[in-house]
Amino acid sequence: MQRQRGKVNTNGAISFLGTLRQFTPDPFPLSNDRRIVAPYWGDVDIRYGGNVSYRESTDPDLLTRATNEIHNVFPQQYKFHASWIFIATWDNVPFYGANSIGMLKCKNAKRFKYQLTHSVFDLVLQRNTFQCVLITNGRHSFAMFLYKKLTWTTGTASNGDNSTGLGGTPAQVGMK
Image (tube, rainbow, N blue to C red; front, side, top):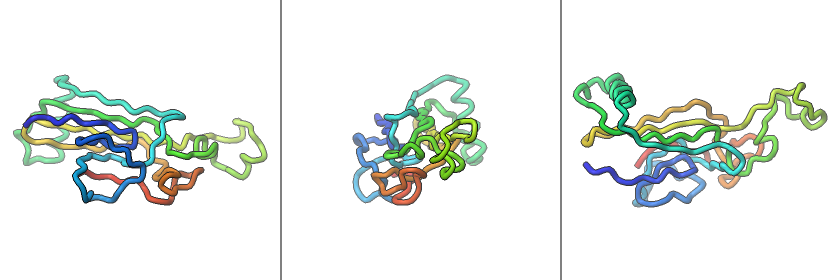
C-alpha cells in the first residue's frame, strides 16, 4: 500500500485530496469526494497563539509504542507491527473570532469588567490541545485521536459565542 500525501489543516483535520479550506465543519459522513481524518474539525485561529505541528517517524521506540497501543485496543491484531507513524498536534489553539474574554477567560467575568488586576482573577486561556496519530504497517492502518484539553467547540464563523467558543455549529470528529 502506498501512502498518500496528507495536508495538515489548521482547522483540526488532515486532508488527502487537497487543502480543507472550510471553517465550519460538515457532519460525517461527508457527501463528496473529500478524504479527511478529523480529530477535531473546528474553527481554529492560530493568529493569536497556539501551534499546529506534525512529523512522521520510523523511530523504533515510537513504533513499538504504537504497536503496543494497537495490540491493547485490538487484541485480534496481534500480528500487527507498525512500520510508520504520522503525528499531528494542535497545541493550545484558540477559536476564530474570540474576543478578549474568549482569549483570556476569567472565572468571574462580571468582576473582570470592574477590576483589571491579575491578583484577583485566575485567567485561563480558552484553548484546545489535541493530537492525531496515524499508524500503518503498509497493509493495515489506524488513527488514534488524543485529547489533552478541550474548552471550546465553535468559532464565530460557525456562529459560536465570541467569549465562550460555544454554540453554533460545533466541531466534528471522524474520518472519511
